[in-house]
Image: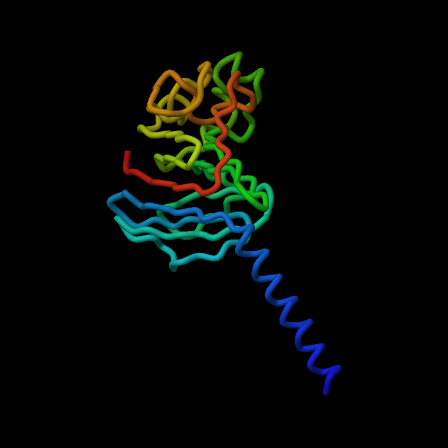
Length: 202
């Protein structure tokens, strides 16, 4: 009986520690759908969701994400999208790298075949079209980046900062807000303890 009790105590400790690790290492990602219609949000990793898809117009949903490393979120008007294929589907990418205590995040609209040389040559005009479908904003405890507007030349958003700006994020339209090509002078990356993603109509 003593051995059994000790075994039970050890099991309880293991369960408690496992739950504690999940709680400590979880980053909360809150989605606000400010669009006029419902929206499906996809994720290339594992998350615990507070809602069922789709997220209704004006609705909110939270994803609790552990230490899953490099991943991405994306959204679609029709069905939960495969974010691993977001560039070929021309979906706005919310690129993430989750660690035990925070998340590195950026917005990317880079076309599937875009390179720095192609950007310098003709703004990646013949590289498949921008990966952009939903105006998106990401905000957290360290800053904010916003990529909005209609699709312009090569499908790139028309209200998404300066792709080659010398500053990052905020409300300054001359700052880099998202990746248009792989290596801009300033990297539009936020390092966050939590993050809030808002989707817009335009």
